[in-house]
Image (cartoon, rainbow, N blue to C red):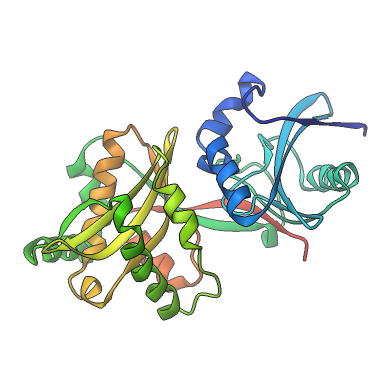
Length: 292
């Protein structure tokens, strides 16, 4: 079937029916895309795709003729709900021909309709928390260990407040130690966090004891969604359950911003995933293509 691909300048003027799919995805925010391309030396490519009478869009980061859609977060085919697995592969093949680059990874936003029948190997899981209108109703969904940990942090004198731009290096020190402790193979560069702290839709929240930072997390807001993708704590913070009060505070903050869902991200192991589910969240599938 004929596919027409056109390179466009950005996603600001896409079809109105598709704009809602973009506004909820922080990782398609124009400022974010520009920031990531500068920090990691990537080329931003925006494509308009006409296929089978329908209009789609595709965003890619390209480096050394390798396509990552995206380098970080979610992108891929925007609004792919009526596409089959084979149709997606056909479009990917045409994108490679059009760009002259090889697709390595495609990671799609997790609001794709469950009617898509993709192979299990292409279905990954993120954990999504619904933000309820009433905090008491929200807390009823918390498991007992969550409620007890929040109360313990409060009794211990933990206070949650914004991490100022001047404290990003303090946050990064705790983050670096956390990544080493959990054996992470990748560590986000401090330069990205420093630039993120200047963005109005990114919020660094910290858990403090006597004004000393013990734990910190980064929350990005776009449309109805908040994304919780970076978290760190030192030994004292873990002993005092600082992260529990921090997340509880973030949920309350999300409600004031009109957020309906918090994406708590995929997990590298079952233990971390189980910890996220204790908040009353649910497993949500998204589609992931790895062409290594």
